Amino acid sequence: MATAKKIVAPSLLNSTNHVLVLIDQQYSPILTVRSHDVERVVNAATLLAKSAKIFGVRTLLTTALGVAMIKEVREVFSEQEPIDRTTLNAFEDERIVAWVEAARQGKLVLAGLLTESSLAMSALSALSVGYEVYVVTDASGGEHRESHEMAVQRMLVAGATPLTTGAYLRELQRDWSRDVTAAKVLSLFDQYGGAHGEGLLGERALVASKE
Image (cartoon, rainbow, N blue to C red; front, side, top):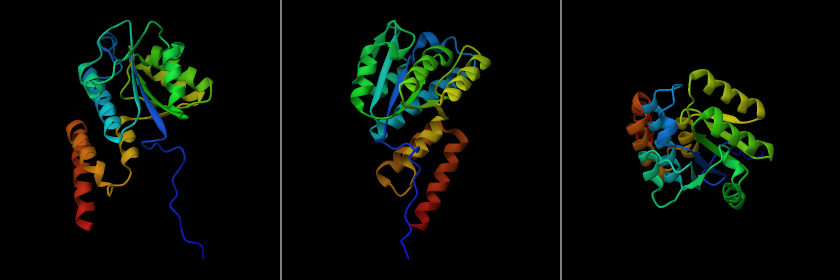
């Protein structure tokens, strides 16, 4: 009888099968966000950046028109100088296209401001040339709820996959026995995850007790 094997969907993200592109996480667009509570968007974007940092995910910062990035996000990758653009669509900048091509990954995780402009244009452009695009909806925001939701729907119809920051982090961890990152992941959830973070701490404690 054949030995049972683990089953892992190829669509699941791991630390080496994708890159993260953070688009215009800047003070100017965040001031116009009305689709979400601004503090929640900033927290989600920071959690997303720190998640990528913990797992060593290749990450690109890109800004528009020289406006400063949100401090909490910028500090996570302080060693990196963001690519500053004049285009709303990040993929109309040849430097960004070159960076993504050089990464040689078929999966792109995107988050950005505003959802209905820079993020949507970038996602649609990447999809058009065959990339698998994942859009982190809670680390993005629009001028109002309808504009954000319609932009997300437009990307989904074109083939993008939606996920939240918490889902992204759990997908990268996936197994609490991976102790190299587990403690750091739980610390992030404790800091940014609210009641859900507290629940995960309890879950991890149960796993530890069984071990």
